[in-house]
Length: 95
Image (cartoon, rainbow, N blue to C red; front, side, top):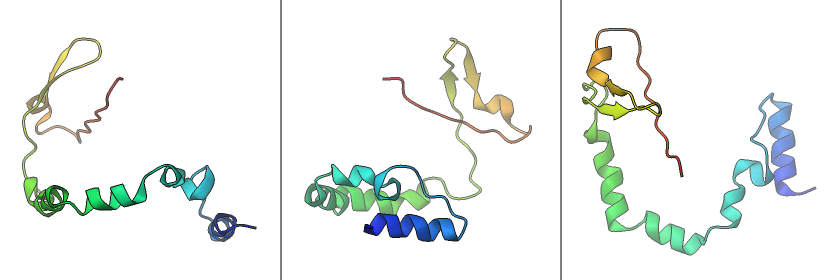
């Protein structure tokens, strides 16, 4: 029995169902160059971005106005939802 088998069985014993796949859902780590990834994460540019992130849009700040196209070609303005029920904006990329 391997390490991840023990982790998965322990999680299931507590009623937690880990993500599918090897390594408890962290299987992509098998294919990453760990040294290159560590250098990138510790780079000056990335560290500055991490430090600046909490101040970009602090909690309670006003959501910026965005005019976006839908997949059907309609335009949506986020200001149209101001003062209504909760608004959830989901984005993605079609590649």
